[in-house]
Length: 249
Image 1 (cartoon, helix red, strand yellow):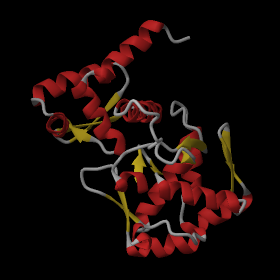
Image 2 (cartoon, helix red, strand yellow):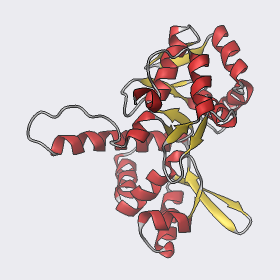
Image 3 (cartoon, one colour):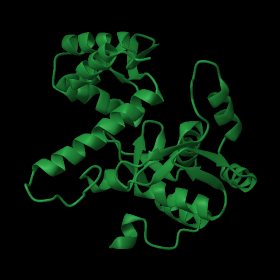
Image 4 (cartoon, helix red, strand yellow):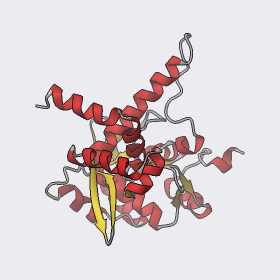
């Protein structure tokens, strides 16, 4: 059982402004150097290294060395889910504090691009991800609830036809030490409906990138959909109502 002391120590680590800034920057799944994270947090590289050492010792951050460079990333999907949940609660509290009147629920990030489509560590989130998930459920390709999820036979055929590497996703989920669920429902921060996480969500996200359907936005968790991707996603998922920003103009 997790001790109260452990909870307090983890909260204290995340509660520092510089460390929170660095963890938030790693939420798009990239690995960054201490210098890059120092710039994001507005602190000296030496100070950033000290913060990263503490977070690495606590299991929040993992390090990877390539040549002369050392890169830092979130240690696990569980850490990403924790940060995403804190962001969600913080956004609600911030909305409630701006007015003494009952607040109108404005969930998730205020940035429209982030609300539309963003990376949630290693899978797709936002309005687009929810719409695509709804389509999979409607056509009987996935069974998803707040408790868990499973692909149907039709879902296997469909995702393989798109190029999703399901074998790699299952291997990733079953590998010892990963503690990764194959198909996990993820409550979307902005839409407050479910999208697909877990090893399956990561494999789908990678497929969309490999297919050229989406691109990561520089310096942001926002994800843009290419013109080719708009048509491909619309056709594959049978999306009929406007979901792409260009449709709303």
